Image (tube, rainbow, N blue to C red; front, side, top):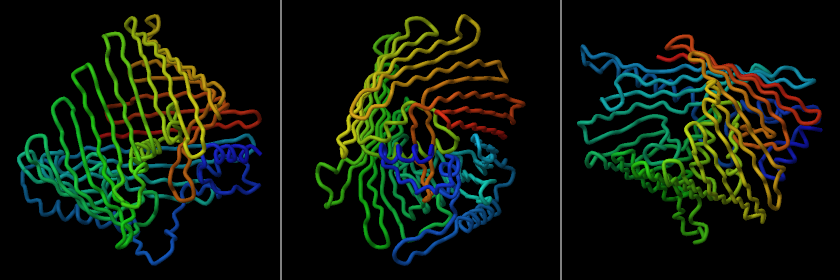
Amino acid sequence: MVKNKITGYLQRRYSLMIPHFAREQTKLNKSFLGGPGGQFFKNAPLVAEGKKKLISWQLVWLLFVCLLLLCSAVRGEAGKDFYFRGALYQDWMGLKYEDSDLYHRLSSRLKLTLWNKPGAGWTAFVDLRSRFNLSYGGKSQLIVYDARLSYNRRSSKLFFSLGQMNLYDSAGIGQLTGGLVGYKFGRFLSAGGYAGLEPDIYRSRLDTAHNKFGVFVRYLGAGAKQFSLSLNRIGFDSQTERQFLYTGLLLPVKRLFVLFGNLEYEMDDKTKAEDRLSHLFLNGRVNVTKYVDITANYSSGRGLDYHRFLMEQSQDPTVQNSEIERFYYNETYGLRLSIKPVKGIRIYAARRESELKDRGIKNNTYRFGLSLINLLKTGVSVYGNYSVNEGDTSESNSYYISAARNFGKFSWSLSFANFFNGVYTGADGTPQVFHLPDRQTLSTNVFFILSRSLAFSVDYTYSYEKDNIEHQFFVRAILRK
């Protein structure tokens, strides 16, 4: 069957933990996006050995709202405007196969910043997503990305946050349910610490047995220069599960050079010396001249770069990104040469090596691309690339081409590729990126703005491989304040 073929491919090539599919489940949508095989919206309690204290996310959210209302009531600063900025995303997604019923899902995302403008005192941040599966039993899932109360003022040396938060912009260690406090030593340098629970935002309940704490130092300099260093400890009850150093760097040097990177270094004595550098990601670009630039990249292991990528990409139904495969390998590195001979035209050539060390697999890719802006003064922009894949388990050569036109308040794009990228979410609620080769994919998007506050986006994707045809629909309404 088509599903078993694709499932087997994913298991063999990427060793993904995909549940066994029943014979009657003959279509991808039931496993990848919510059916009995994949349980995309699984909302069951955590199950594990030993006793655990579980707290419902709904209870945590209710307590946060009560705290926010209490703080608002005691604010007592008359005559001061209440700051409010936010956006509401309302999505509908549908999947239809040749001989299956329409699978469809509703999703809502609420993102708010309120009370005071960031950097002007007390500020509340909210980022929630609710998914409701209209097919297969109508299951729902609430995801809390951000629900915190923060204090930060330019004139104050202290800053702190309390609640459910994302720490990529401070200590760089993912999610935290707890508190963070820091001290500013000057205009650019700060240090602090954090403590609390380690949440799994894709679970319906909070496990109080998993805890985390750490200390960090951070530098935010002129010209977007950034550096952070943190020591992090993750534990279960009273035992240490992991202890590691994390550091991140963004170093632009005028318009000549920019370097971005992050790494994780294990501090556990039981870890072998050769395994201590568990994650390293580097990306550097040099502008040789006004018309030529060179970009080099290196990635090893799956670290925060991978997890942050998943969290961001899971907001949309598909990931049409040709670089997605680097997350499947232990190590990848490459070089790209880009040339801009005249205004509106860019040509590039790239080579990338990929290695899956534990299985002795090495692959390499040569990629050639071309982009044309405002082609023949028609307002149409065209982009395309062609990849030559070689190696131990290399796939067939792949290509991608797209065209787009902006008409002001209305824009339209069309693309075609001989592969399919997406995000698969398993029974444990954790998303995984996947790549299907030799699958023709035609996509189109229409985006139109009705007013300063309201916009709509409509996507349609037609994907096929032999006798397996898929229709995917995606509609999004965006309301901003």
